[in-house]
Image 1 (cartoon, helix red, strand yellow):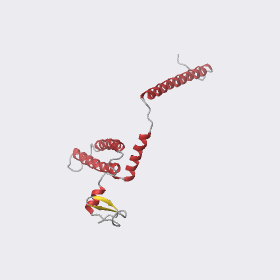
Image 2 (cartoon, helix red, strand yellow):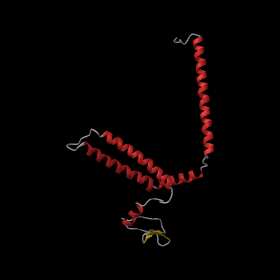
Image 3 (cartoon, rainbow, N blue to C red):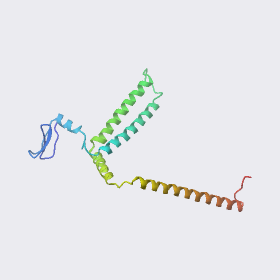
Length: 170
């Protein structure tokens, strides 16, 4: 088996070289080593890390759900705990590989994460003073709106009692 690469690019001595030759061919072992390497390893570190943590938490929650789902499962003479453990190993293995593939190997996803991290660095983040000021404005507006709704409710209550549409409990 061989891998076709871009003309002018070939694999030699454990590294990709540019310049000599036409269509380069590399051996299966070298192609496998390149395919399992992390795509653009040094870029998008924080985005990948946080995505991996979030994905891992989702997988762990799913594993707990599977564990609980199989609490009463029995296959022949095999105890329930062994069925649960086998299912958890399969779930963690499959979704662990899927997460690694998406976060470390798939070029489109990795490029998106790298671009996302680049855009996040361009964001003008608010300082502590601005955040506190905005928080107090929101709290004040919530209080004002609550008082408005309370007042409107009392006015409507009084009006409907006055026209005898609403009965009051005395």
